[in-house]
Image (cartoon, rainbow, N blue to C red; front, side, top):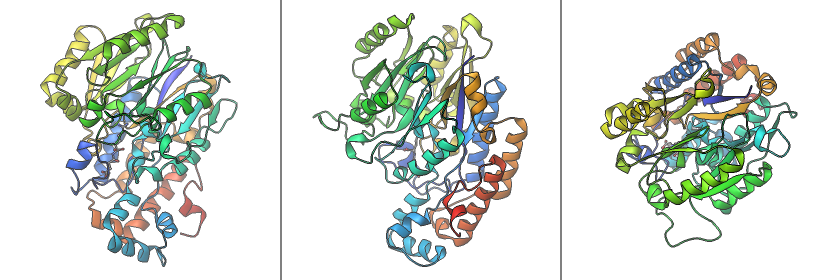
Length: 446
Ligand code: SUG
């Protein structure tokens, strides 16, 4: 039987608040605040453990190595690693912040994933996201691709493409702008790609905040994944300007159910009709739960940036649970929406988690995970070092406690001792994961 497996981003030791993402309100508001990487990583592990506790398979993707001294060398900085960090800080603190971000933790942006049931060759297809709209995030795709190729190495089951070319017409943010409707995960589904703008046909009403995903990128991904059924939908510019820099801030889909804010799409009635018609040949009618709470509440609470999960053993009833940030409990309109979903039988359970460290950078439960639908054989082919069980969760907790700081400021990023600490931590992690030589610093003399 096919099941969806979540791969959460393990928060890296450089987690900090640099205010790097224009249009992401939480990132801007928390700029310069002291972060707590240890708490951030432990909060993420608690969420992973809870999803596992629901009887669902759970994996993780390791953090990227940062500060990226190798990138600074490409910009002409020379000397020892310590020299380069000091010079970069002096030249431009924002540059150092950009190369030091732990943003790879938001693995919903790692790649777009098409399950085997949807693709022409019956393999799971991955396109790592180029993330070219944000300088700090555009640094991620090289290592993400390498990582995915080692974790999903079996080419009988998996195909990991290159990221789309780094061309402004092809801005791609991965699964954060990708939904899938189906009856159950293993059956053919309708993939719904969401873009913020058409790069080659700009429109007068394009948003003021960056519209990161282009229509052109979504066409390219559907084509290289060999999809026969895909729909392409534009984000409402008003949603982007209200702070929904990714569609998963205002919409979440699982199986036949889509929860979304009324502002997410320009013409929601027409969209529901279109998707309903497109699902007809697949033999089901999707369910929509549209919310009309104030858009500001939706964005500050991240109620839609939740994980909508099919509970195992739900059988024909297909029962679902929501994994939500604790901010929802503090936002009456959002809490009322979730309570209404339970009362109406749309979901069965709601679980709330303290993810404040990630949330303060605009990353909720859904941002922190990449969904991969896997049949039994494909699941057995996933590199076991990143598949979690209780023992490995405990081991990772111990690893975090041993290696992570509990406070980090931007000035710490230039501390050469900190670079050694992060590399020591990641070196130990590659042993836990059995992924030797994953990081560049392990391949060249550190
Ligand atoms: O790309 N924040 C991330 C948050 C990504 C959320 N992902 C999804 N919605 N799927 C971003 O804006 C902030 C980093 C900083 O400001 O230090 C940041 O990159």
